[in-house]
Length: 282
Image 1 (cartoon, helix red, strand yellow):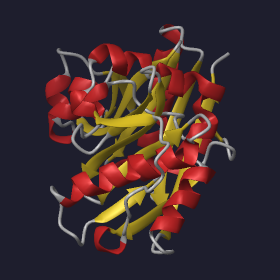
Image 2: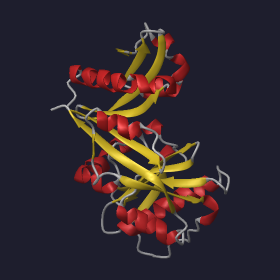
Image 3: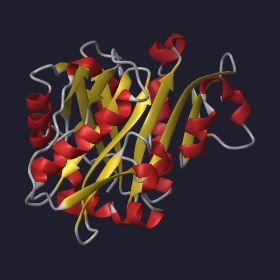
Image 4: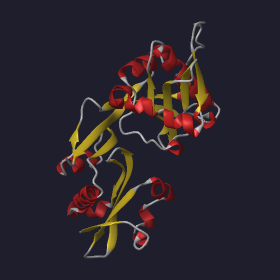
């Protein structure tokens, strides 16, 4: 097995397993080639998410080569490339169901360790089961706007949500700073009367359903903000998605999940777990 940095000179070897969107969003792409057959058998894509930190966004290893060391060659090649880029660490937020797909085992065998404090369970409920009433509180001091109506400057200002307590207590760890990662019609941000950011719900549509990647808020009216953000996202999703679509939450804080459980009448069930992995380059 031979790992290699994917660039314009060798991209054709990996095009069958690399979609245009992944290629566009990635800051580094690594591939692995089976030297015996000459076939490309694996791809790893990563994105820069902070100061000298790379986050693994995508790992694919052809099932015919998984027992031949292709996965380890892929990850080790990436680690060496990250060192040359002077990265201080590597993260990977891996969502898995109750049946293992082998990614967790691969990462741990290559020196990644799971951070249980940043890991969380994946919850889901059908859109038809979620009922959210209007907030009747009259003294609310915030407004909610969809991501498509938020300027790039305001989006850049939202970094305070990532930086607050390192993002860990607000479900922000491992999320992309790139605005176009999210469905801008189904993602919302909350602002106080001074225009300061107080909360956000960021999501995207996938094969699994509508994935809420984070539901987070700060400040004295935190519970109301979480409720309002979720209501806006659910209302918007009903205009775009079928009622049998699953609304999945994989990056919510404990307080956010309490809100979800309350408004869904216990409709949310555990679908799996999101594990936050870290590799310390030092």
